[in-house]
Image (cartoon, rainbow over all chains, first blue to last red):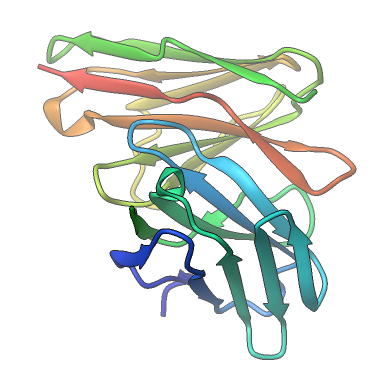
Length: 111
Length: 115
């Protein structure tokens, strides 16, 4: 079982719709959870971080964490064509440890 | 704050030559730097972890004699790809943890093409 799993997509949604991205992780020791957006040929860009169970909202983005189910999600409301990118779920364990990334989900927002 | 400057952003080299990639922390001290590699349509895979003043720790399957990592100061970590081969062509990214707020900062990445 991979440590961080995501559906690779592509996920296609119409402009203005809600895009829902999901991620599961295997190590219960995981403490910090992140969603990154990556455009082709570019470095990942942080969208959201979440550390405790529940929802965290920032503008059009909502991250949800359920540690009991080892599940993290990202909702993008009012999706825009500029949101089209690959979204990477990443988790880290306590201490000075590296991020472990999922394969990424490619999102395509159709105008 | 917490900016990592990575250079070069792209490099083309001949097979058999060596290439050095630098990651410099501009406004903080990076005691730890993580080096990732990303092949097309794949995710970021951790290659190694470098700590200032000590030997790097390499992930399984990564040749330490081929990918030389030096972290001689709190603001500079380098990755040297020695005797590069076409299969080393990839996107290399460095990342440092930001102390105190659980976040990470990333370099802008280096696109290496070996011909």
